[in-house]
Length: 221
Image (tube, rainbow, N blue to C red; front, side):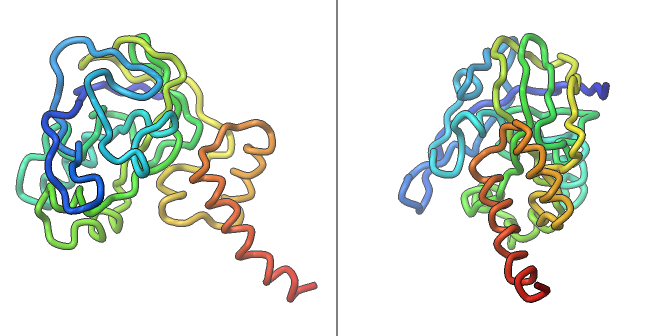
């Protein structure tokens, strides 16, 4: 199976003030030294300030690829070091933005499962200070992926990242973020019907695709 490398494990460095109802954001994450424990709600020592949009079992860990970070470093003319995207894991050799939903990653003692793409927010844009950042970041499709924790344990920079399982439906977080075709939605729905564990956000997308198809089906009938 595919193997990559864990370059850094990142957790919150400082809470920064925001203008939203939460009042703070945990977007400022930095690389930790040595082994770090991973539990069902994420990285020990990390938090999510807004639990409505971040965190929880299905968004316990956020991963971003070095290859995508290198693209942005070139685009922005500055180094996008680990944690700069608010990620918990900076990986190399693994395409986080194109990981298949339900794909499982083994890192050290830990087993993670790909769940859904990251949706950029205004706090991310303010943190980076880049104009039109949300639209620009989303437009490139280099959005990274959230993962749930199947088995906790310790991880640290330098651990291999091994893709132990990749579902046959083949639908990626990038495709979900860009908008599923009816055929992709059918494959993902079939996997869900067969027992695949999808997040509420993903099932809402599938329901929306089905609702959009219903009028067309009625007309053709």
